[in-house]
Image (cartoon, rainbow, N blue to C red; front, side):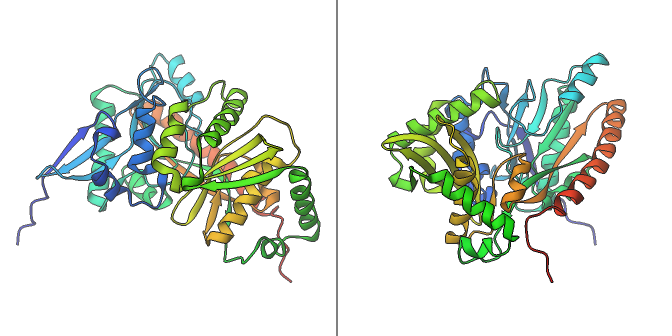
Amino acid sequence: MADADPPARTISLGTGVAAVEAAAWDALAGGANPFVGHAFLSLLEESGSVGPGTGWQPAPLLVADGAGALVAAAPAYLKTHSQGEYVFDHGWADAWARAGGAYYPKLQIAVPFTPVPGPRLLAAGDEDARLLIRAAEAVVRQNELSSAHATFVAPEQMPLFEAAGWLVRRDVQFHFANPGYRSFDDFLATLTSAKRKQLRKERARAVAGLRIEQVTGDAIGPAHWDAMWAFYQDTGARKWGHPYLTRAAFDLIGARMADHVLLIVAYDGDTPVAGAMHLIGADTLYGRYWGCVADIPYLHFELCYYRAIDVAIERGLARVEAGAQGGHKLARGYGPVATWSAHFIADPGFRRAVADFLERERAAEAQEMEWLEGHMPFRRAD
């Protein structure tokens, strides 16, 4: 009996997520991770945070069936730099330029400015997900780009990229895992005595003389967004040179995603002095933006890490993901977790050089992960 013909599919490169029907996109995204939802990706476009002049040109990969219905999609961007990615390939770009090649533009399958693991191939089945990978490769070849990169890929999707021959890169983040704690004291009880004392002291010192407010949904008002924007600008100016998000992006987040947002703001009297913005997923609290206008010891830890643990326990969330980097999170109960990216390099010689680099990098990463896992602050079992 002859095999059935594969279903008809049309693959295209879109002009932006905002141009895609929200319900169709979200049916593929699934709703668990707010960053791959239509609301977040489209507001980045509409606010001018991505698009002309930003180096992030939206170019989502789209797969439709014979009736024109969307059956697979990937958030993708044509990049003219490597900023806002948190998976660093500046060395690759420099090496390719020295060899006479043009590394940019490149194709980036990612959520802009967001080092949060999640699905990058939005599809109901593996066959359509594989079409997205082939589409990315075709965009690179047909437009003579240097490469395509899928960053912060959900671990369960990595085998699809590996089977397609993409190079694999591993990095480390620090996440808090909630096995079912009933309170912060339950969590503290798992730590060594010295660490318990340290965390209690940090929490008390951080909030001395301050008022802490936690708001979500309709309780978030314009004054909260004004304060958060000031905090974000301060952090952006110090870390990145300029903020990635525009002011309009914060307003749109408030208008469209407030029920997924938790703001934790510290006040000295009536003056907001620091704040942290978290997004709430189906089983995860995502720490995203932090800033301050006064240098208060341990307040960063309190708003970004300890309060996040409180919220995760209260809401029964499985984990807190507090962003990229940050070995200081280890001493505060956030354990090392591998994050993954996949890379398609068009030129065979360049691919071999990158593959060699990644092999050496993986060996160093394995040693680092072993060291980190051995220095967690938890009490050792008897």
